[in-house]
Image (cartoon, rainbow, N blue to C red):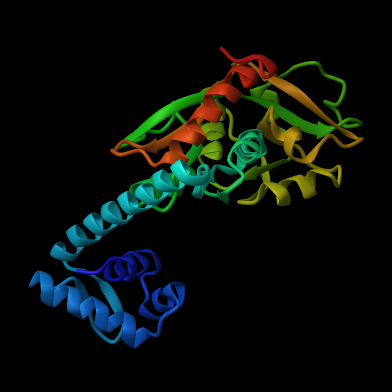
Length: 303
């Protein structure tokens, strides 16, 4: 068994397509297919369900994929640890973050890079469900997501801050001079909200339902940037986390007004796979988060 066979298998599991997997590994498709057939012969089990195109993995193949991911993760950890002993931490730290928490990521990556300049950083915008799958499939090392709303599985958690909600609305609109706004009243405004596949939207739906209101939604989007662009036109309002302006800054003509009745909040934090060993880059990322979390607690009035 050769590590390159496991690399090809991991790529196929991620891409679900022979051609794209081969391209990701920078080999020809026949080379990738031949290596996987050799692996099947060595293990004496079918791994891939073959047809005219990739059709999935056999039950035995799913177990082989799981072991391949574990073995390759262990190899990454070995390389990182040896590199750390020689010249400082090296490797690749992959972070997945829900869109409403993207603005907080630089508070982690900036001090991380200052301390570990040889580590390459990748940040992906993902839904909470995508983060769970990516953690399970060894595709990201750390997720930044909700910790206390929808169930998480097979992860360790590190709370960072508590997300509270504001109504972003035109300053010259009917609610622009208010100091606080009830959720029931906010539901009657023409709203731009994230799409229902986002956990933030499911949270908001639950709060509106709890006050007996159906929000007046005029625009849905899965892009925080698109939502912000619409708000800048001055015609609509949006319910967003209090950290929203940290991402785009404040703009003249808009106000962020706290929402009350109820005063709702949810915990945002880091999740990592609940398995051993923990990669050195992951542990280093968690160490930075523990330091940053204390400052976030104060700046955002966190419990």
